[in-house]
Amino acid sequence: MNAPGSNSNRHDNDAGFDDVILSVEGVTKVYPGTIALKEVNFAVRRGAVNVLVGENGAGKSTMMKIIAGAEQPSMGRLLLDGVPVELASSAEALRHGIGIVYQELNLFPNLSIAENVFIAHEITRAGIDIDADAQRAKVRELLKRLELDVSPDTLVEDLRIGQQQLVEIAKALAHDARILILDEPTSALSAAEVEVLFQVIADLKSQGVSIVYISHRLEELIRIGDYITVLRDGRITGHQPMAQVDVPWIVRMMVGRDTKDFSRPIGHERGAEVLTARNVSLPRKGGGFLVDHVSLTLHAGEIVGIYGLMGAGRSELFECILGCHPHAGGEIVLAGQSLAGKPIARRVADGLALIPEDRKADALLPILSVGSNMTLSNLAAFARGFDIRTQQERASILSYIRDLAIKVADWRLPVSSLSGGNQQKVVIARALMTSPKVLLMDEPSRGIDIGAKADIFKVMRDLAVKGLGILFVTSDLEEVKALSDRILVMSNGRITAEFDAAEASDNALVAASAVGHRTGHGTAPQPGQDGHDGHDRLAAA
Image (cartoon, rainbow, N blue to C red; front, side):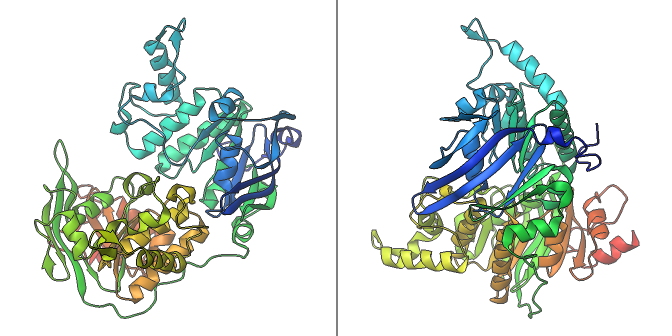
């Protein structure tokens, strides 16, 4: 068997790949105010990775929900093994061997891994009671297969996000799915966990399992896919064997032209220092620090990127700046005023705003409308006594929908009806409605496509030109170099280097992200310094 993701000899058995297990024929899906899919035809081939790609809002998630039984088509039909089939629910799709792993995790954090894997499908003894030992044994095998070295009795809430993603995959594998849909499966995985996933996919392919794979990481698709189908505005714009396409072709089919430029930072003058962090520290349970005496500065009109790997302490640093951890040490100064002792609400009122990494868990209220989610943090601005000035609120909502290019038919629709990229824009709109001086953005492009990224990056540039200071976290090298005026690198809770964006190289950034303050691979800034000479120190190392 070829190595996972290898293109060699991928199509030397075309007859096998031409064996279509599931056909989507002429499917149209209409929602109130929008047509999500327009006469779509899509074939899932047996024993192959069938890649589906498109911008946020292109219709990918809708089609996957139809295949998985979570939605029913308005027109058209599905054929499974050549026979028409109606999938009225996800449970019925699972009985037909169709499993799905959604991008947004659907786990019960207060239950164990074994309980989550078999929730609503428990192994029983004669249908009377749950055979917990049999469930643990089965899950132990699955975790070994996924190279996840934890006990089946571990609570899901005690796992990292990447480990939780692997538990979602284990849930699908536990039911012996013939068709496995993976929606952004690597969005929260480390590089090592991605390699494990690719090996699992290779093993499943060898067993004849069909994979439908959705991702925004285009190089990843080239590596793992056998066939690719591109959606744009609810229609199929391209379908080819993966061996015959490249990244420019995929982008052209997705957005209608060769690329959406991230652009270089605009050469405007930065303003006065607007944010200062001095010796910020956050103790770790059991000893050590999650954030280890970090110092940094941010100027008005400046975009500073923080690059680092998962677990480097980047998100925890943002939480400290916003005041989420009362026991954190150090000092935060905003526009010349100390924030010592101030609660989160007061810091937001003074000019701090955060775009969290997990918009579903930490930002959005899915049952509320798009407009309500936008104005939630700034209702006082629209209040008149005990009433809300609805016309003023509506005008503000429509203004942000226009300025941020949010694709929504009606701002009164639930925010859950939007694609991931448009949901992210709603979170940004809410933050901007508080008129911040500093915007903290934690992985702002997580789980969104290249088109939505370009829109959000343009917004960031425009805001910086207007004088907003932006501090953002990313683990994407291309993003941090394209967007930043300055780049800070974090590792093991400390800032290990600082670069001017024009001088930063991939190798230097990756090397700095691997530097631990006791590894001997480089010298980290000492407490009280903000790392301005980090580039020289790293070069010397």
